[in-house]
Image (tube, rainbow, N blue to C red; front, side, top):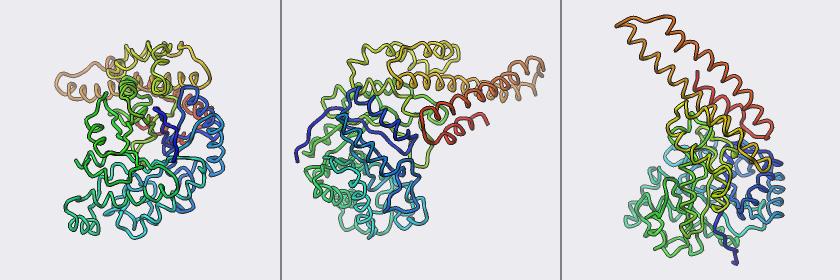
Length: 440
């Protein structure tokens, strides 16, 4: 099984905002120019799978996937599918049609002891592989199985295997599917967090030797203790950063804080490990949308080529942007909104990325101003009972700003919808309505 090696990989999660086929190909051109040579597509629910009827929320057809893959191969990129085999199956298990496969009733996790579970997952893998005849790798997910062995069937297995415990059930399921894809001539990779979470990195060696463990660590910079622990398994270990992922304020933000992401991706790039740079579309299948890829243009450049980023004309702006977003002081955000409009761009992706940053900063400023007004009104409601109030001042500081914000939000909404349409992005209504709901 001869495979070319490569330090930096890119992962794109399609359960979030998805561009059209044409625009995905434009993005692939950009990613290749940045320096990425392999890209992992986590299709999730965005393709209508024959093996899971009536479950998908499709954005791409199989023919579109084939053409996207052909475009990637034509520019020297390998597309690698990611198929979740255990956890993160909310999109499927939320449907009553598939409720019988749930682990103890939880919609995000498959019961590995269900007699149909492995066969159905393998059939899905085989269906996905029909779209990717030229690949060498497949990613099998297998992360965050938080409800592992909570049903009666799984607990019975745990009682009979106290040495391996819960991870024995996990290993039997995941290992079996790894062997299935190895028999197809592929090298499997899985996220390694469950071995670390359960404190059983010693058991990882039970996986087939061809398996790659991917240690995702999305906060701060390395080195990470868990990476060294996983290496003792004898399996190959990759790292994984996050170009875009969950953060404290993701419900009411339209732009990532670049300081946190840059520290993470740049640190992993210095680790000496092969690195998969992940770009998540939602925190989970049943959670809110993250920003479009345009909000992470600068991070893509830095992840692929730190040297290029160190000289990029956007870097000084990003150095100021990170601390300013942490504070979200209006007097800092306002000049940044004007400055972002002047950033030099090279190509349409950077141009649209600059526009997203502007829209994201404007939204951040609106949220901050809205919170200030609403919290001030709550405080003044108490103050009025004790010492009275000046109606004119009250209107000036609390009523008029809300009228201004309503006008600003309406203008922002129009521009954001135009952005989605211009860039042929999915899920426009959901994203805009989620952001507007903060002001409800």
